[in-house]
Image (cartoon, rainbow, N blue to C red; front, side):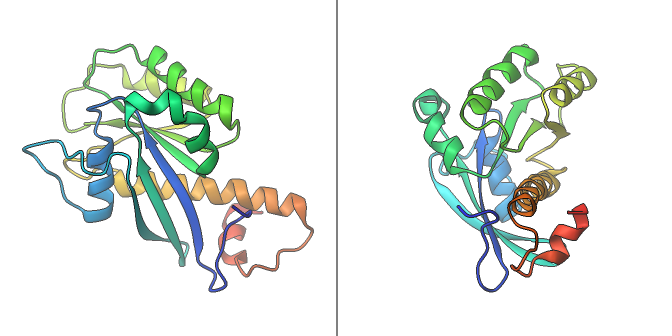
Amino acid sequence: MSIPNSKPSGELEFKILVVGEDSVGKTSLIIRFIGNRFDDITTPKTLEGESITTKLDLFSVPVKLQVQDILQEIWENVVSYYVSDNDGILLVLDITSKAKMKSYLDYWLRTIREVKTEIPVIVLGNKSDLQPKVNIDKTSQYCAKLGSFFIKTSAKTGENVSYAFKLLTSEIVKKKAAAKKQAEAKRTDGLDNVFTKYDL
């Protein structure tokens, strides 16, 4: 993928990977983002392993997103390929889980960073509509220490779901804009109205 990947019309196109343990709400978050709905009876699994394309608007520029949810059980076998093939990652954790968040974050972020050090990763503390069983402040601080934003989300209510995808897209653009600026003195891709938002 070129840096940044853009079509002649000025449309940006990026790939986003959604990862995390089973039952944290990965697929529900994707369905909420793309279809603005939530299945309160069963956890949808129809998207696992599949890729869905959608669009969002970033500073009046259309952005095409290819979003994919990966099955946890195949993660270690495919991590190198999928991380290399994507532009940004949403790492989902369940804030109602009693699991140790430090160990959880260390595992997922370590495997990601070993493949692609600079890839933007945003951590989503999902199920914010329920009572948390983790220390939100400490989790957020630890994510920051690891170089990632932490956002509380709820696939059920929609809280911060669109914001999370838009923030990750913004971080991807910043990374690619900085790389492009470093590679050439002057941009000729017509995307200055996006890049100048980041003073690049």
